[in-house]
Image (cartoon, rainbow, N blue to C red; front, top):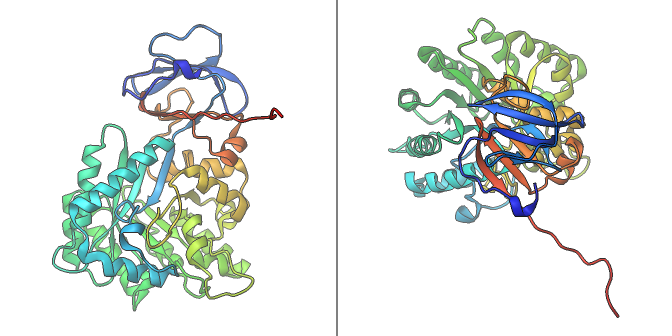
Length: 415
């Protein structure tokens, strides 16, 4: 697709993606019908129709799925101006700012972050939203429910009620009644992690809801709430999916313990979400040398057959002053800090993430949902390495985001 034929996002269906590169290097034409991929055939070089896209020079992937982000906190760093520090300092900064949060201010930042994610190629998002201490605990809930409704045509958004220790049970129940999908929390940050875990699971069970918990986000190898979670939910039905996010302490355990916990997690059907950028930023600040990476035992979990995905977590807020929200950034960190292959890293932010989120398969495969990302790159490794700006994004067969960049360089100078 040449710059002169660039098609802005217009929300209209795309019948055919022509001359696009598949991840195996083939040049293919991808025919779409309604919200599905109908056929993937060798490229025939036919001219593109009025609504077709000529994607010569583009790589075609399944769209990104974001399994863990905090849209209610996103882009709040300049608003809060927190000190740079560890997890405890970030929590204190956020909680100190809570009284100044309004439904409108949260919704405005969340909407901006969600649309930016869409422009990168993310068509499905699971966002945690804090229940806030004080007389109006559901300000964030109301804000994100509003954003979800506003963007429903272009983004699939799941919401998790992140319940701090001090928030009453009634607020969690009310959030679920309003339409929040999952119960969340962080038992390891409470006086009695085991009791808090049981509390959150009890509330979820009362609603028949799944859970997505911040688990063991610290470096103490003795903190293994993850193992208790695995043993507790073994009999839970598939209709109540269980996700454990972070699981940092598992990365500090001895190999035999790691294998034991990973096996229990696999047996319980728990999905694990790793959050490399925020954990690399927050963890190990009290280690002046030989800093632990602060990441979960990803290879052991994969080897045990655990469903694993990777997320952005925090975007320019007290928990992470940087981060763009681009899943290629997450995939790059999985390769450099967690030693995954480019194929494993790519899957963790696309197909594997969708599976963990309970979404139907998507991508350039016949019969799959036509949630697609075309990026100007020679292959998957090149795309992860360079995170090219030129991208076109389809949600259920419709063009919902398009970005084009221009570049010029000088190779020689006249005297």
